[in-house]
Length: 258
Image (tube, rainbow, N blue to C red; front, side, top):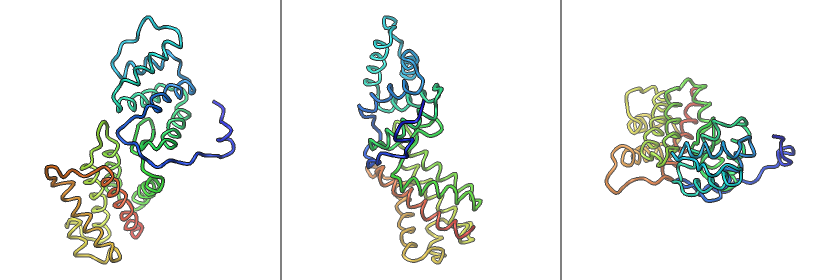
Protein backbone atom coordinates (compact mmCIF):
# COMPACT_ATOMS: atom_id res chain seq x y z
CA UNK A 1 0.00 0.00 0.00
CA UNK A 2 1.46 3.34 -1.07
CA UNK A 3 1.91 6.00 1.64
CA UNK A 4 -0.79 8.68 1.77
CA UNK A 5 -0.26 12.41 1.23
CA UNK A 6 -0.11 13.08 4.98
CA UNK A 7 2.46 10.33 5.58
CA UNK A 8 4.59 11.42 2.62
CA UNK A 9 4.68 14.96 3.95
CA UNK A 10 4.95 14.23 7.67
CA UNK A 11 1.51 15.50 8.70
CA UNK A 12 -0.15 13.90 11.69
CA UNK A 13 -3.57 14.39 13.26
CA UNK A 14 -3.59 15.73 16.79
CA UNK A 15 -4.22 13.06 19.40
CA UNK A 16 -7.48 13.38 21.29
CA UNK A 17 -7.63 13.12 25.06
CA UNK A 18 -8.10 9.48 26.05
CA UNK A 19 -11.70 8.93 27.10
CA UNK A 20 -12.31 5.31 26.10
CA UNK A 21 -11.30 2.30 28.18
CA UNK A 22 -13.20 -0.98 28.45
CA UNK A 23 -15.43 -0.08 25.52
CA UNK A 24 -15.48 -0.41 21.73
CA UNK A 25 -17.38 2.54 20.22
CA UNK A 26 -19.61 2.07 17.20
CA UNK A 27 -17.23 3.97 14.93
CA UNK A 28 -14.42 1.53 15.85
CA UNK A 29 -16.61 -1.46 15.02
CA UNK A 30 -17.32 0.08 11.63
CA UNK A 31 -13.71 1.08 10.99
CA UNK A 32 -12.13 -2.33 11.57
CA UNK A 33 -13.56 -3.91 8.44
CA UNK A 34 -12.46 -1.09 6.15
CA UNK A 35 -8.98 -1.09 7.70
CA UNK A 36 -8.69 -4.83 7.10
CA UNK A 37 -9.79 -4.43 3.49
CA UNK A 38 -7.32 -1.61 2.92
CA UNK A 39 -4.48 -3.80 4.12
CA UNK A 40 -5.03 -6.96 2.13
CA UNK A 41 -8.00 -8.84 3.60
CA UNK A 42 -10.77 -9.94 1.26
CA UNK A 43 -14.42 -9.91 2.31
CA UNK A 44 -14.55 -13.68 2.90
CA UNK A 45 -11.35 -13.62 4.95
CA UNK A 46 -12.65 -10.76 7.13
CA UNK A 47 -15.85 -12.68 7.84
CA UNK A 48 -13.92 -15.90 8.51
CA UNK A 49 -11.75 -14.15 11.10
CA UNK A 50 -14.72 -12.54 12.85
CA UNK A 51 -16.67 -15.81 12.89
CA UNK A 52 -13.67 -17.68 14.28
CA UNK A 53 -13.20 -15.19 17.13
CA UNK A 54 -16.93 -15.03 17.94
CA UNK A 55 -17.50 -18.78 17.49
CA UNK A 56 -20.10 -18.20 14.78
CA UNK A 57 -20.89 -20.14 11.62
CA UNK A 58 -20.76 -18.08 8.39
CA UNK A 59 -24.08 -17.77 6.59
CA UNK A 60 -23.78 -20.05 3.57
CA UNK A 61 -26.43 -18.01 1.76
CA UNK A 62 -24.02 -15.05 1.68
CA UNK A 63 -21.26 -15.54 -0.85
CA UNK A 64 -20.76 -12.27 -2.74
CA UNK A 65 -18.69 -9.43 -1.28
CA UNK A 66 -21.35 -6.97 -0.12
CA UNK A 67 -23.61 -9.46 1.73
CA UNK A 68 -20.54 -11.06 3.31
CA UNK A 69 -19.26 -7.70 4.56
CA UNK A 70 -22.71 -6.74 5.82
CA UNK A 71 -22.86 -10.02 7.76
CA UNK A 72 -19.40 -9.36 9.22
CA UNK A 73 -20.44 -5.84 10.24
CA UNK A 74 -23.59 -7.07 11.97
CA UNK A 75 -21.57 -9.65 13.92
CA UNK A 76 -19.18 -6.95 15.11
CA UNK A 77 -21.97 -4.61 16.10
CA UNK A 78 -23.61 -7.26 18.28
CA UNK A 79 -20.55 -8.70 20.06
CA UNK A 80 -19.23 -7.72 23.53
CA UNK A 81 -16.78 -4.80 23.48
CA UNK A 82 -13.71 -6.84 24.38
CA UNK A 83 -14.28 -9.27 21.51
CA UNK A 84 -13.77 -6.35 19.11
CA UNK A 85 -10.16 -6.10 20.28
CA UNK A 86 -9.77 -9.89 19.95
CA UNK A 87 -10.87 -9.49 16.33
CA UNK A 88 -8.29 -6.75 15.76
CA UNK A 89 -5.52 -9.00 17.09
CA UNK A 90 -6.66 -11.88 14.87
CA UNK A 91 -6.90 -9.65 11.79
CA UNK A 92 -3.34 -8.50 12.46
CA UNK A 93 -2.10 -12.08 12.72
CA UNK A 94 -3.72 -13.03 9.40
CA UNK A 95 -2.74 -9.87 7.50
CA UNK A 96 -0.16 -9.79 4.74
CA UNK A 97 0.41 -6.11 5.53
CA UNK A 98 0.79 -6.18 9.31
CA UNK A 99 2.67 -2.89 9.62
CA UNK A 100 0.12 -1.00 7.54
CA UNK A 101 -2.81 -2.55 9.44
CA UNK A 102 -1.27 -1.67 12.82
CA UNK A 103 -0.62 1.89 11.69
CA UNK A 104 -4.23 2.36 10.60
CA UNK A 105 -5.57 0.94 13.85
CA UNK A 106 -3.23 2.98 16.06
CA UNK A 107 -3.98 6.19 14.17
CA UNK A 108 -7.68 5.55 14.69
CA UNK A 109 -7.17 4.90 18.41
CA UNK A 110 -5.23 8.16 18.77
CA UNK A 111 -7.72 10.21 16.74
CA UNK A 112 -10.72 8.92 18.71
CA UNK A 113 -9.33 8.96 22.24
CA UNK A 114 -9.21 5.18 22.64
CA UNK A 115 -6.81 4.11 25.38
CA UNK A 116 -5.28 1.13 23.61
CA UNK A 117 -2.55 0.48 21.06
CA UNK A 118 -1.77 -2.43 18.75
CA UNK A 119 1.83 -3.41 19.38
CA UNK A 120 3.50 -6.56 18.02
CA UNK A 121 0.07 -8.05 17.43
CA UNK A 122 -1.28 -7.41 20.94
CA UNK A 123 -3.78 -4.83 22.16
CA UNK A 124 -2.13 -3.04 25.08
CA UNK A 125 -3.05 -0.18 27.38
CA UNK A 126 -2.12 3.25 26.04
CA UNK A 127 -1.75 6.34 28.19
CA UNK A 128 -1.39 9.98 27.17
CA UNK A 129 1.65 10.83 25.05
CA UNK A 130 3.68 12.00 28.05
CA UNK A 131 2.82 8.83 29.95
CA UNK A 132 3.96 6.68 27.02
CA UNK A 133 7.26 8.56 26.76
CA UNK A 134 7.85 8.09 30.48
CA UNK A 135 7.31 4.34 30.24
CA UNK A 136 9.61 3.97 27.23
CA UNK A 137 12.30 5.99 29.00
CA UNK A 138 11.87 3.98 32.21
CA UNK A 139 12.24 0.64 30.42
CA UNK A 140 15.42 1.79 28.62
CA UNK A 141 17.03 3.26 31.74
CA UNK A 142 16.21 0.26 33.94
CA UNK A 143 17.74 -2.01 31.31
CA UNK A 144 20.87 0.17 31.10
CA UNK A 145 21.21 0.01 34.89
CA UNK A 146 20.91 -3.78 34.84
CA UNK A 147 17.67 -3.70 36.83
CA UNK A 148 15.92 -6.52 35.00
CA UNK A 149 13.56 -7.36 37.87
CA UNK A 150 12.37 -3.76 38.13
CA UNK A 151 11.90 -3.59 34.37
CA UNK A 152 9.84 -6.77 34.49
CA UNK A 153 7.65 -5.35 37.25
CA UNK A 154 6.78 -2.15 35.37
CA UNK A 155 6.09 -4.28 32.28
CA UNK A 156 3.72 -6.43 34.34
CA UNK A 157 1.98 -3.29 35.63
CA UNK A 158 1.24 -2.29 32.03
CA UNK A 159 0.05 -5.81 31.23
CA UNK A 160 -2.37 -5.62 34.15
CA UNK A 161 -3.78 -2.32 32.90
CA UNK A 162 -4.17 -3.97 29.46
CA UNK A 163 -6.10 -7.03 30.61
CA UNK A 164 -9.47 -7.70 29.01
CA UNK A 165 -12.36 -7.72 29.58
CA UNK A 166 -11.40 -5.98 32.82
CA UNK A 167 -8.11 -4.36 33.84
CA UNK A 168 -6.36 -5.83 36.88
CA UNK A 169 -6.22 -2.60 38.87
CA UNK A 170 -4.80 -4.02 42.09
CA UNK A 171 -2.22 -6.04 40.15
CA UNK A 172 -1.05 -2.91 38.32
CA UNK A 173 -0.63 -1.07 41.62
CA UNK A 174 1.29 -3.94 43.19
CA UNK A 175 3.68 -4.33 40.25
CA UNK A 176 4.27 -0.59 39.92
CA UNK A 177 5.31 -0.25 43.56
CA UNK A 178 7.35 -3.47 43.33
CA UNK A 179 9.32 -1.82 40.52
CA UNK A 180 9.98 1.25 42.64
CA UNK A 181 10.89 -0.88 45.64
CA UNK A 182 13.46 -2.84 43.59
CA UNK A 183 15.13 0.34 42.36
CA UNK A 184 15.03 1.98 45.81
CA UNK A 185 16.77 -1.04 47.32
CA UNK A 186 19.57 -0.75 44.79
CA UNK A 187 19.84 3.01 45.24
CA UNK A 188 20.01 2.74 49.03
CA UNK A 189 22.10 -0.43 49.26
CA UNK A 190 19.42 -1.83 51.58
CA UNK A 191 18.20 -5.12 50.15
CA UNK A 192 15.93 -6.17 53.02
CA UNK A 193 13.50 -3.41 53.92
CA UNK A 194 10.20 -2.66 52.23
CA UNK A 195 9.76 0.57 50.29
CA UNK A 196 8.01 2.32 53.18
CA UNK A 197 10.80 1.42 55.59
CA UNK A 198 13.49 2.29 53.03
CA UNK A 199 12.24 5.85 52.63
CA UNK A 200 12.14 6.38 56.39
CA UNK A 201 15.59 4.86 56.90
CA UNK A 202 17.25 6.43 53.84
CA UNK A 203 15.41 9.72 53.19
CA UNK A 204 18.37 11.08 51.23
CA UNK A 205 17.91 8.81 48.22
CA UNK A 206 15.35 11.29 46.85
CA UNK A 207 15.09 15.03 47.50
CA UNK A 208 12.48 16.22 49.98
CA UNK A 209 9.46 16.30 49.75
CA UNK A 210 9.54 13.42 47.24
CA UNK A 211 10.26 11.10 50.13
CA UNK A 212 6.84 12.01 51.53
CA UNK A 213 5.23 11.36 48.15
CA UNK A 214 6.80 7.90 47.99
CA UNK A 215 5.77 7.12 51.55
CA UNK A 216 2.17 8.11 50.80
CA UNK A 217 2.20 6.11 47.55
CA UNK A 218 3.42 3.08 49.47
CA UNK A 219 0.63 3.53 52.00
CA UNK A 220 -1.93 3.85 49.21
CA UNK A 221 -0.65 0.71 47.48
CA UNK A 222 -0.73 -1.19 50.76
CA UNK A 223 -4.38 -0.33 51.32
CA UNK A 224 -5.58 -0.40 47.71
CA UNK A 225 -3.29 -2.99 46.17
CA UNK A 226 -2.47 -5.58 48.80
CA UNK A 227 -4.97 -5.27 51.66
CA UNK A 228 -8.12 -4.32 49.79
CA UNK A 229 -11.27 -3.63 51.76
CA UNK A 230 -14.78 -4.42 50.60
CA UNK A 231 -16.21 -1.47 48.67
CA UNK A 232 -12.84 0.34 48.49
CA UNK A 233 -11.64 -0.79 45.04
CA UNK A 234 -9.31 1.77 43.40
CA UNK A 235 -10.30 3.39 40.11
CA UNK A 236 -8.53 2.77 36.82
CA UNK A 237 -7.32 6.38 36.77
CA UNK A 238 -5.76 5.98 40.22
CA UNK A 239 -3.84 2.91 39.08
CA UNK A 240 -2.67 4.74 35.95
CA UNK A 241 -1.49 7.65 38.09
CA UNK A 242 0.44 5.36 40.43
CA UNK A 243 2.07 3.46 37.55
CA UNK A 244 3.22 6.74 36.01
CA UNK A 245 4.47 8.06 39.35
CA UNK A 246 6.40 4.86 40.11
CA UNK A 247 7.91 4.86 36.62
CA UNK A 248 9.07 8.48 36.92
CA UNK A 249 10.69 8.04 40.35
CA UNK A 250 12.23 4.71 39.32
CA UNK A 251 13.77 6.47 36.31
CA UNK A 252 15.21 9.16 38.57
CA UNK A 253 16.75 6.61 40.94
CA UNK A 254 18.05 4.34 38.17
CA UNK A 255 19.84 7.23 36.48
CA UNK A 256 21.84 7.70 39.67
CA UNK A 257 23.07 4.10 39.31
CA UNK A 258 24.29 4.38 35.70
